[in-house]
Image (tube, rainbow, N blue to C red):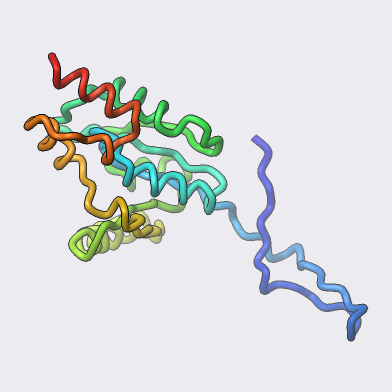
Length: 191
């Protein structure tokens, strides 16, 4: 993989004066490219998750969707199926890859050279818990950054637990999850 160099725009050197002057970038001001992960259980991936992924993919050069297995959390969709659903949902977004972990996100980030964790925020209640987690991650890692992205308003009410609740009672989930996920979950519900 070829790495591009990123430059700090404030590190320009002006040569000459007036309209014929040149702005050059000092080579000593190279900024380290940011490697970002977007962790979650994605059980299932929702339109809210997809919103964050699409928007973050325009900001970061590469994003790893980190699918977590929580030993204390009972996932309803097996890991391999969750990955397949994510792959279908993000098809066409080129700067993504998908990995899995059963450990701490911060440990995975440090072991694999990531320097940013992306977290989606739906509202104030999410912010409080995410802020606490980002501070713990920063302490554990010696400075790993967390970037909070506000979910677009049309997706701010979506959460995976509500998808399952609606599905249980025969509700329509088509406005909550990508089309491929909707088809798969409705197929599972029919069994």
